[in-house]
Amino acid sequence: MKYMLLIHAGAIEADGTPEGCDVQDWMAFDKAVRDAGILVSGESLADLVTATTVRVAADGERTVVDGPFAESREVLGGFYVIDVPDLDTALDWAARCPGSRGGGAVVVRPVADFGA
Image 1 (tube, helix red, strand yellow):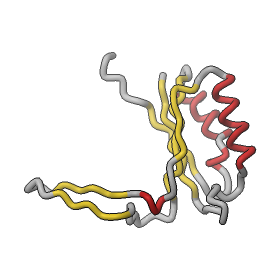
Image 2 (cartoon, rainbow, N blue to C red; image 1 turned 90 degrees about the vertical axis):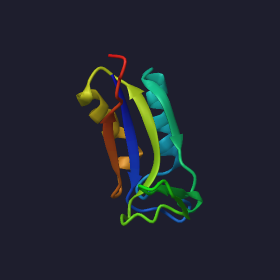
Image 3 (cartoon, rainbow, N blue to C red; image 1 turned 45 degrees about the horizontal axis):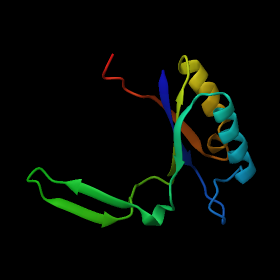
C-alpha cells in the first residue's frame, strides 16, 4: 500500500535545513528508502518565500497571493511516497525520517486507490 510522508519542519536552521538534522541525515534516509525498494517518489520543496496561494470564491473569482500565510509555525518541507505492506511499516519509516526530529513532524497518509 502506498503512503505519503509529509515532512513538516518545526524550526529551520540558518542554512535552511530543519533543526536537529543535517544534509548527511537526509542523504542517509533517502538512500535507505531507495535501497529498501519502497520509494515511489519524493521531493524537497523550495524555500517557503517562493510559495503562492490560490483561492477561488463561490462566485468563481480567483485570488492569488504570495506566500502561504498559514497560521502555523511549521513549514511543509517536502514529501516521500513509499510503498510498504501496512501502516505500521509506514510509521516505522516516518520515525526514521530526519524531519521527525527537532520539533518537526512527519504526517503519514495513505494514498487513495480509486481503482480498487
